[in-house]
Each structure stands twice: as C-alpha cells, then as structure tokens.
Image 1 (cartoon, rainbow, N blue to C red):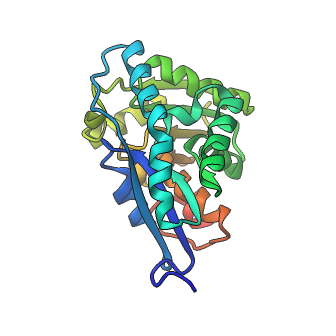
Image 2: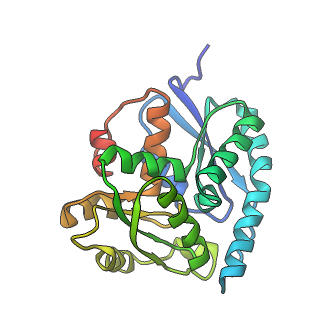
Length: 247
C-alpha cells in the first residue's frame, strides 16, 4: 500500500518554529507524488546581538532537534530533510557527519542536511573557488568556512548579515541580498553560496545565475535537490536555477 498523495516519497521536514521561508520554498519545489510533512523544532525568537548570543541560540535549536524527529516519525516518512542549516556546518566534516548520524539513529531513515547538500551542489558544478553569504554572525560564518575548506574548497569571501533575530532573517529585502551578491562576486569567484534556510533566496539565486553568469546556490534549493536525488527522483524543475534543471 502506498500513500494516496505521496506515492513516490513522504519527506519529513525539520525546521525551526520561527522559520517561515523553508516550508513554502520546499512546497514550491515539490514534484508530483512527493509530499512534505513538517515538524517544528521549538525555537524561541532569540535576539542575536553578538557572536555569543547567536551561537547560544543555535545551540537551543540543536538541543530540540530530536524531539522534532520523534514527532515527525509518527507519520512514517521515507526520508528526512533538514530545514535548518547553521548547526549542520558546526564542527566541520566530522561535525556534520555526527549530526547526520544522530538524526539517522533516532529516525531509522536517511537525511539531507544543508552542509552536505551545498557541498554536493558545488561538486556537481565542478567548482572550487567560492564565496558565501549568510544571515549569521561572524562566529557562525567561521564554521561554514571551516566546513567548506575541509571539503577542499577555497573560500575567497564571505558576508554575515548579522540579522538581529530569527524572524528578522525572513524580512531581509531582496535589494539587500542582490547588493550582497554583487559585493561577493569577482573574477576570482567560481560560485556563490547562500546559507541560512530562513533567508528567502531561491528565486533570486536562479536569476543571479543569469546576470552573474556563474552558479549561485540557494541552500533551500540545494537541500531539496539533494533529497530528491538521494531518493532516485530525477525530475527537472524549472524556475529554481541550473541545479534542479540540469543535475
């Protein structure tokens, strides 16, 4: 017997309770026969005013992940998709692997994380010299940089937008994001990555690939692409950039 609407796959999606972007993004990229089932990681809307408060806030999210896993597994999903990115970068390659093991051991199914997904996307494009932007504070950007550099990429530039709270991340204007992309760009950069799942960039990244003439990878696009491909779903989706259209 198969699910009446999720006849190809049921995805359990884990995201902070403050996140308002990842759910509509993933639903927009959902092909027929795949359904997304959300479990909110309880997350107070912390005020981030320093490296220390930002890291403390993300630790609170990390502490609550397994409760969200337990909740979503009651609908028997085939696979989990991580809709929160910062903690998947912490601790470099081993930190990401440990996070994935923790989730997989608790759930009994596979998981796509933002860190592993953006790495796979960069490898699919065949690039090495990258820049990235985030809504984070510098200390968290240091963890993202560490992860990419351990994976063999050269990080040339990064910009932390230092959003003052979790919900304010979703309110960053498109004009600010476009200006940030332009500030990161240069002839030395082969690709630009956006991390932070509550930052709305899937459509801007797709457009930016045209006017910058290079890969621009939005983490929500990469994570959902990674989950689809990990489950043998090869549908090409238009409107979200080359990653979902070509790979």
